[in-house]
Image (tube, rainbow over the protein chains, first blue to last red):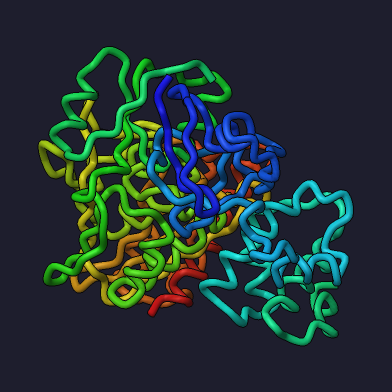
Length: 163
Length: 262
C-alpha cells in the first residue's frame, strides 16, 4: 500500500492505495465520497466522471496512484458554499433531467466541464459532448434541456430537432 | 484486476530502466490497457506510468513537420494541432468521448495498434515518423498487423513527426456503441503524391489502399475513384459488418475524405 494525497473539493485528503486501486474506488471506499457512482466499470457509462486538475475523466479508468498530488473535484464539491444547489444542479431539478439519478453525478460533472470551455453551447454541441455519459431513464432530452438552461439559454425548442 | 507495482518516473531514462524489470509494461492514458487488465487479459507485474514525463508532452511545429509528444492527450492534439494540421486535429477530436480524449494519448494508441483505432490511419497516410528512445521508425515499417508493431520490448515512443500535407481529411464511419471506426479513411495529398490509409476494415490492421492512391495521385477528386473497389479478402467480419460491407466502405469513406479535404 502507498499513501496517496489528493486535494478533493479544496481539502487535502490522504488514504492508502494499492497499485490497482482505481480513483473511483479510492474516492468512494478510502475517502467515503460515495457521490461518484460506478456504473459499468468499463469506461463507457460516465457515471464516475470527476475533474482531475480541471479536466473531466472517467475515474473508474484512472489509477489512484497515477494522480497522487492532483486536485480533484467530485459531485460533492459542486454545491454552493451555503449548501444550495449550483446552477447546473438546480437546472437538472427544474427540467427533470433525472429519473433514477444514478447517472446524474457524472452528467453534472461532464456538463460542468463543457460549460467551462464553452459557456453557450448549441444543442448539437451538448449532445456531442455527452456521448460518453449514458442515461437509461430520461431519453436525454431533459438532460440536454438542463444543460442548455444552466448556460442561460432558451430551452423551449430543445429536443424537437432530435425527434 | 490483479495487483501490480506502480511506478511513475519523471524522465525517459528512468522509465526505460523501470521497464527492464520482470513483466513490466508502460502505461500511458490507460484507456485500453486498464480495461483489458480488469478483464484479466493482461497482468503486468509492474506498470510504469509515462504521464509524469514532461518531455513526452506537447505539440510543436518544426519547419514543415508537426511534432507531437507521445504522451500528449487527444484533447490537446485536437486543440493545438488545429492551425497546422486541421485534419489531424479533427481526427483527434472524434476519438472516443471527451473524458477518453482527456486521458488517452497518441503514443498509447500507436503502440497498441488497435485495428479500428483512428491515429494509425493518420500516421500511415502522412508517412509520419515514429520516434522512440532508441531510433526513428517510418510509419510504413511501424505497423505490423493487428495489435502488432515494430517496437521492441521496453522501447518507448517519445514523439511522432507528421509531414504537413497540402490537403488532407479523415472520414470515419463510426461504430456508434464503441465510437471506434467501423471503417475510416485518411487521405493526405503531398507534392509527390497522395497517400490513403484505411483503418477498421482489415484483419491486418491499418493499410494503404494503393489503387486509391494511384488514382488520386493523377486526379485528386472523388470522381477519380469511380469504378474502383477494395477487395473483401482479409477484411474483418463481425456482427457490425461483413467483409463485403467493409470493403465497400473503403471506397465510400475515401471518396468522402477526398471531398472534405482542404
